[in-house]
Amino acid sequence: MEKELNVTYITLDWYVEVNKYRYIYFFVMCILYILIICSNSTIVYLIWTHKNLHEPMYIFIAALLLNCVLYSTNIYPKLLIDFLSEKQVTSYSACLFQFFMFYTLGSSEFILLAGMAYDRYVAICKPLQYQTIMTKTTVSIFLVIAWLFPALHVAVQTIGSAEAKLCNFNLKGIFCNNAIFTLECERSRLITVFGVVCLFDLGILPMLFIVFTYMNIFIVSYRSCKEIRKKAAETCLPHLLVLISISCLSIYDISIARVESDFPKTARLIMTLQIVLYHPLFNPFIYGLKMKEISKHLKNLCQAKIISCINTEC
Image 1 (cartoon, helix red, strand yellow):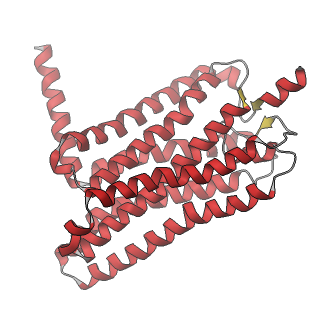
Image 2 (cartoon, rainbow, N blue to C red; image 1 turned 120 degrees about the vertical axis):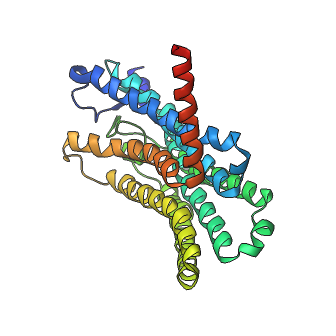
Image 3 (cartoon, rainbow, N blue to C red; image 1 turned 60 degrees about the vertical axis):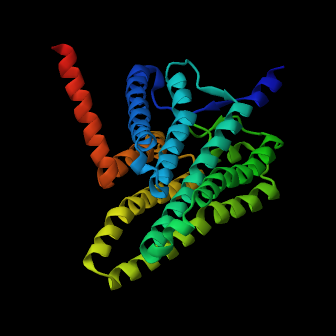
């Protein structure tokens, strides 16, 4: 019976002084989670309610921010529960589900950014054909691929890990990422090979596509008038900043499971939290402040809320 329980449940052991600082951890992470949900949802709400934002570029932004909400919801509620629990444990099946959602949603961001890059490429390099190319059907195809394609890839690794025999029940992490492979007695060749396939299909290939499209955008912009260069900078810069952010965090996530266990626990905790902290907070502020139309509607919404509060108090 004890052996069955050990196989079913695993311990998350990267937490530092949880018993001593549990309420501080809980309070800080709860505030951050609320901030992530509110900031991302606000931008999605603005895009949803304003018809002048019902364009492919803004639809992709709304999809990206919705992705951030789902991504954070996959991580933060379990973290908050762990901070208030005596022992940080999870069932292996729940861990695999979190792993599946983490990499499906994380990988979909690269494809969504590829869709954004293609949209900007058509708008700047082929403006006369924009309405013909970037139709609702084209956008819908990109959105379906963005969520379905990663899900199918990650499902193979998840199913393969579900069938694996475990020899270790202490996960070196605060949530279930690729560190779950260290629990297995022997990593199967299927998971190893398909891991490389996933890296290429979900990371490298979209990245190459994005680099190719932006190179063409920069070439066309450089040869065009000042107004075209300004338009390209205003619309492409936020996408590039988000791309750099998620690329750096993805490289870290891929490499963190390979770092030996004698790496300081506190440093690991801080570095791992960056994966689920910076990017979901970074996106809405980048698009809310840098995208002119979204920024305008955001200011109007804030002004309306302030006036409403003042009138209510009066």
